[in-house]
Length: 229
Image 1 (cartoon, rainbow, N blue to C red):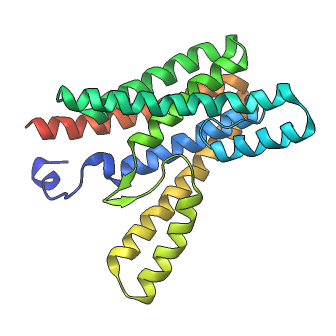
Image 2: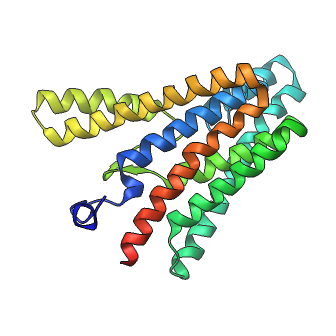
């Protein structure tokens, strides 16, 4: 894309549709992977983990309850890390989204390397931390709020905005609703790919998440280079 065309954008690349669908594909991929291969736990969908935690508490299965509590705790710690790192990057005038992409790629690479050889709680720790950094870093799509990890709000917004946009003939709302719907499709595609690969290759299938992550890093690099021009 030429600089001339890129200057016409009124949003950063990390708020663009390419970045959003890549992120939600990754989220679907990771959460399906942990559900299929890591004893039905979720890396990022903490509502599911909380639900299973409460159910197993009610059953008196304390050991299984801890299985679901672990990603919740790590996800919370990831929020503290993200906040402190973001403050540090702003203070030192570093490009936060570029730092975040490096953290995500680094954590994912470690998870891919160790997962086939270590107990599952190491994998769930890495991926819950990964999801926490992702969800608090990427939160807007062309100026509109969306979630790159949990999809409940996106399901609601897609239906509401598309309906309101067409009833009121508001093209901007139609566009936001359409983009949100694309995010949902991308998430499901990530789930489909991850489940298919996980059933065939087991824990080795986690390596598939590195492809969209490398693409994401290239997108953010493109934005950074343009800002410096």
